[in-house]
Image (cartoon, rainbow, N blue to C red; front, top):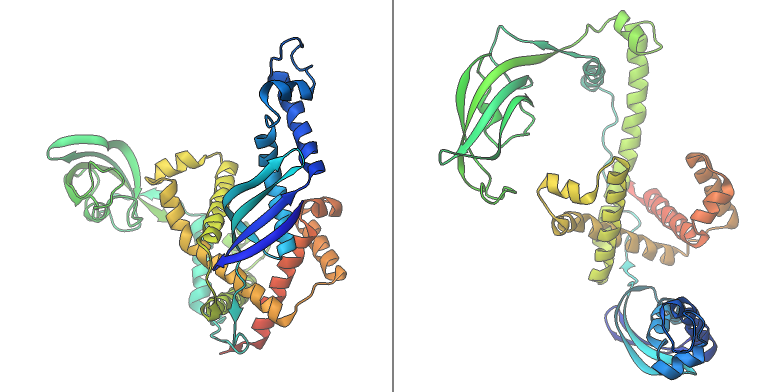
Length: 425
């Protein structure tokens, strides 16, 4: 297989002319013949026993051509892309030029990965977030720890307020007609959580246990149930119970129960140290985010839609895998969210566009700075990954291709280079 010709027809688009030699083509035809012969009935032969030349004499010499070519296209294009020194993103069209026993040739219109240019990436100005552990921040962390061991206690001496959990029955009506999904009994609702239609939770605030009342709301114009979108509704509500969080006392006994510390002062000092480490890491991460955002603004070049499309699908596949690990499937999740795959695609698209542009911009810096990765760098990263994921070194090497890891390390070095040259205020 070889590249016969390449032509840059428009931005990020090439037409490649590719030859597939006789030996490669015939070997693939033999593979196809062996796969298919068991399903073919040839007069005078038991199923699966007819020689190839008999099949071809009966059905034509080209009987296996199409299947063989379909199998060979990906590898042929991959080799052609390497010869042409381009990275193929997607294949728009394939046209057969010639095919016969001696091989075949074809033209492929392909979209390729662009090489962006980035200027003035050294000296990017960024602002570092404060990493001071204030008394307010420390108290927030303490409150979170207290909240973890809080308990819900019944409230009988006051009306419901934001932050309470109420137990209610409700029955919804539109134009005095009950609608599907509008009724529930003994439903737990955290007031202020925004779980219900806007205005619903606010109208429960101020009511007491055993109150029966109506809540008047309007469904959002873009509500997922089209029959209810934009409609006025009445919910008849009965309030059974009000519950509020009851926090434990923050004292030495609490500290001993939740940590290996003995006193409140020891606990605070340890918590402050951990919070400081967290803020420092967040500040560094924020600096990198500012840098890559500004790097995107400096990047010049046209990015093909196919790259964004591929990235969206990769993100959806990753999300689907996470759902699967939680016992959910994508279809069920989309049903819960009142959306479809197009809606999910649209949701991921802006982030996908940013990811693609960031990667291409950083690769432009790699080229400009001629960043290289040594064998020692590569081996050290493999060892780090093996330790991190607690697997054998050789297993990591079999999973993560050296070429891909090398490129990732180059990009990481590009980030470090830009960060070191940045003006941090």
